[in-house]
Amino acid sequence: MINEEANKSWAIRTYTDELLNFIIFTGCMYNLIDDENFDESNTPWPTKLSNSDFENLHINKLKLQWKLWFNNVIEERCNNINLDKMCVFVNEIYNINNFLELEYTELRECCKKSYPHFIDWWDMQAGGKSAISFYEIMGGSKFCDYIEELECKLNKKAKPFNLYIDIVYTGVPNVLDINDKYIVVTPNGYLNLTKDWWMKKLIKLI
Image (cartoon, rainbow, N blue to C red; front, side):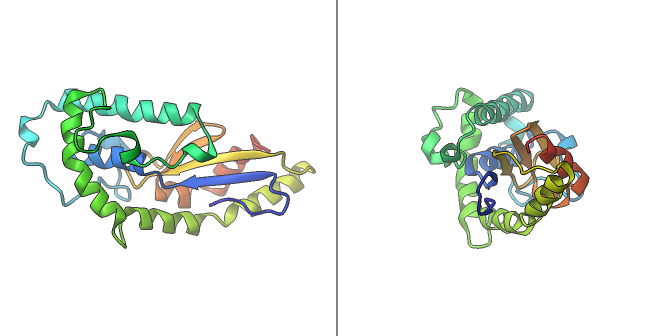
């Protein structure tokens, strides 16, 4: 979703990134994500998949590898914010047969097993990509109003800016406010963050 104001001086760009959602899907499938990242309205995903090898895994080691993987991808996106680089397909980065590009050996095996489950669900008609896109559309109409209100309050037009928002299905707190120009949200965060929160965020940009 992109603001379509005539002057095009600012844009709020939302993304349903496949790579980020795959990382979180894998973390959920192997129980590698801290419980504090979930609540009753933001539950682990996928809930119906089980892993027969779970008891044989080195969970503490895998949890550390998963955190490093997630944090490294977030850092890379944060440091290379670019309109053309914000939608990343898993098979563009990794050989999905072996994930040898991933430096963590144990985590590669998890990815090899989780990817077929993920992509089947992600691409199905009512799957993850469609679900997140729905929330993206539902939550986007408020930003023009917020910007107009701030322009009136400050008595000036908004300066050119881009705010990049990654939407992930679950697995993180409702919002990860990475920096002034980049945040990661769940659908609940995207829809339910208060007007006051958004106004404080946007006023830093305009």
